[in-house]
Length: 112
Image (cartoon, rainbow, N blue to C red; front, side, top):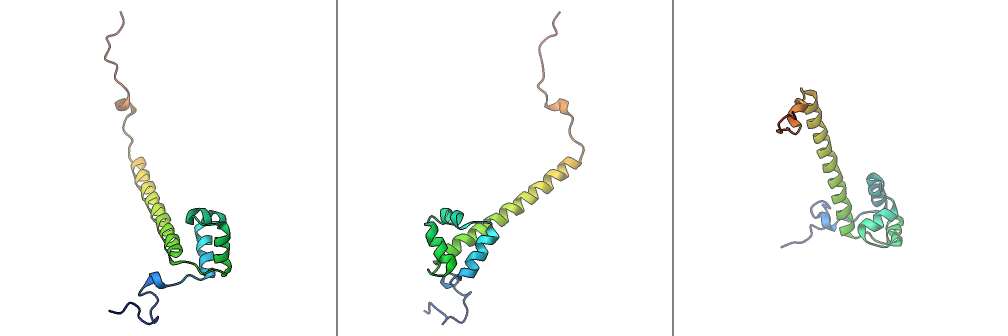
């Protein structure tokens, strides 16, 4: 059983692909994250994130995976929010139910 394909197809095993400092910086920019915020998110020291961004340290595979997961999560949240906005705007455009049906009923006898 072969574990690697000789490097001819880097997408065959994405966990073996490496992230370049340029791609790392672009990912942070796309996510709107500073290096300090990225350090908090990844639970590493800010100097480590700075070294990854400058290319003095190799970026570990789990960092690439974590940033990709965060990007996908934000995309899904935006999509869900758009769907919610669409469904609420559809409901609000129809006739709204009378407010009297939602008021608390007073079953007491009138005062004499």
